[in-house]
Length: 306
Image (cartoon, rainbow, N blue to C red; front, side):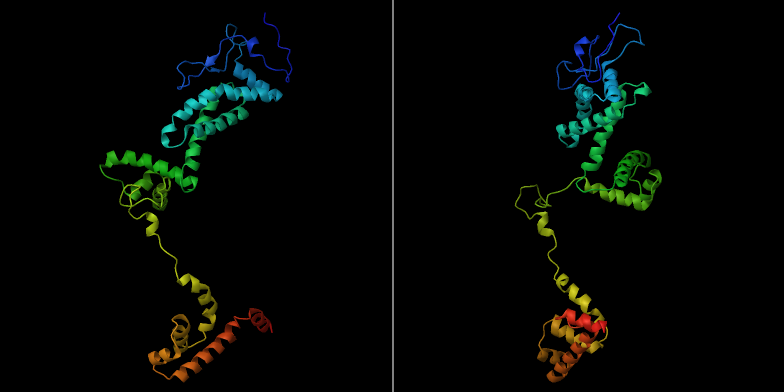
């Protein structure tokens, strides 16, 4: 006859008082299976048998015992490490993957349904693996790519592996779209975004190994665009220039955009310098009437309100 457990929800859990031997998950880092995980009740009928993880889950979910939750997390960390090791060769630090997998374990413990009659291991494993895969999907990309395109890219890789042996050639975009149940535009976009998974340093050389003295990729980037500095002026002056005739616009362009003197303008246009001066003055008056005085914008606004 086993003594009845009269402890309350706040009483500490004495593991030594629970019968049965511990069930263990083998951690590949250990030479022996030394980490106890989810000890189980044995030697009694099935109705009376009770695994420690189920006991702790009830303590947590029914009585809010946070210590039971913490013990469950500690007990199942070897399972997290075992699952995380499967993905350790994909370029991410193993410790980071363990932390991510631990999040999946905690979510599994918090969401566990006592009424479903499944073991925590069965429920926690897909949660841990899913969290690790989600980490690679969301965090592993150098440039943030929408999740839909990431999933389509993964699907396309599988489709390509299936179609190449079958077709004995690379599949076309339309063939990929049909096999992946996507549009050709979506396939093209997914294939382009696949380049965003890995990044290249701007200091790397495009023609040689990193560390050589050749010019880096940063040297091939474009420089400042001079036209950007005048873009705002062009936008402001556009309504006024629309009121000028072709010759007036041409003369103002030569004077203020190309920086020619009145004499140089007169020689290029074929008129006298005095005529150029009168045309410039008249054109500026038209501009002021249309867009206002740029040197005193508050006066221009006041004039426009009248």
